[in-house]
Image (cartoon, rainbow, N blue to C red; front, side, top):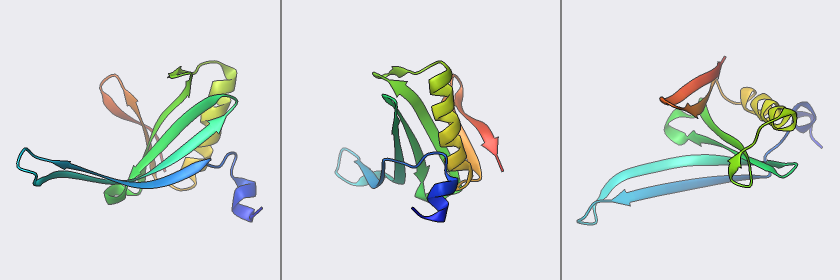
Length: 108
């Protein structure tokens, strides 16, 4: 175990670098998304943090979820707190998707 892992309250169960390309009706590139997904799993819950490579100082957190429903309660709160600790060491801004779009929940 490295020193960094000892300091992190949780570590991702998987990290994926993805590129999504959306083509228009002629087959030309319309949109391109280059991002890194951080997957977290604990106690039957899952969460995902995403950072787009063109704005790597900001991450968006989705979850936690249990059985595809939003997880609630003390265990879910502890899981989210641990994830936030991991993200706060790596990003300057953390957002979540709220009713009116993305909301900043933490900023360095």
